[in-house]
Image (cartoon, rainbow, N blue to C red):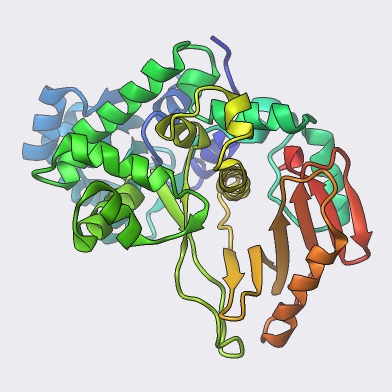
Amino acid sequence: MTFIKRDLANKILELSQDYACVLLTGPRQVGKTTLLRQLMQQNRNYVTLDDLEERRLAQQEPATFLSVHETPLFIDEVQYAPQLFSYLKIAIDNGAEPGSFWLSGSQAFRMMELAQESLAGRVAILHMSGLSQHEIYGSGEALTLTIDLQALKARKEAGQATDLKGMYERIWRGSLPGYVSGKFKDRNVFYSSYIQTYINLDVSELLEPVDKLLFQDFIRAAACRAGQMLNIHDIAQDIGVSDDTAKRWLQVLEKSDVIFYLRPYSNNLLKRTVKTPKLYFFDTGLVAYLTKYTTPEILQNGAINGAILENYVVAEIRKSYANVAEEALLWYYRDTRSNEIDMILEQDGRLNPLEIKRSVNPANQLVKAFEVLDKGAVPRGKGAILCMRPELTAIDADNYIVPIWML
């Protein structure tokens, strides 16, 4: 098994010098517990609420739980005992030292709600996703994607080049540490177990009762539409449930970090924009498994090859920001006149339009679509085509061609 250094490590240690409590959220099996245990010094105590006796004590006697377990303390799977959060607030207000509490757990929405209700201003909240392309294949420090020539050159030095075949191997392989590190070698068993654990633990807690087999079919139906505009009715029809049920189940997938959305960009000067978000999965390996692509080669030539590449790119850009504890301001653009831009990244008060193409030699005319943003209130900045070109280059002074392996 290969140890993979996580980009969030330094940020966790840094914030532990300032905050009494650091909360790490994210989907199941992305390595939250592994990372925090690796960062623990010998004097930090560890307790997991997967232990039913510890969970019972935390739920029924939270004050006693915190008295028994001395600080500095790492509480894993803390979402199982929301009763703890009020008592953590008391401990922090009574002068708990910086770094006293590390908390981790899945169900990011629920964790955020608990933290904002009880620990507002007292906790540093970090989000951890699957492994980034930089963590698996790159080197050096983590960098956010910035559409600036010098920044792009720095990313080039930190990345590891690959061709189209290699890119689809990365997409098919996915981002979950258990499989990528080599700990688990049977991909089908790994992802099957992942889905079953997710449904049995997270979904069963958020939806009661739920038909587990039907919900698995639902996740598969959603995966078939990764990288596309959301159509709740089509997903519902695929598995024979109502639109309201499909909408509620999509909310569960979002709350547990299995999916995320890219919202459409608009402002008061761009009145013809669509309102429908685009659907993405946090892990393209999970998408490939659910859609029954058994090899990277089949995926590369399959019906979803463009959509899953777009999913990969959007997820990687989000990770580049999350891994340095920054928020990515990302949208896509589409209007009723069929003008479309795959992604818009807002930085420093400017809109950076991005196109995602599978081609090695994308047409230069693609950047003409960027001009629609000139009608808006926010100025347009540099643009880029993210594609399979092996080298960083440019169309003109305002638009770059960026290899996807650099993300």
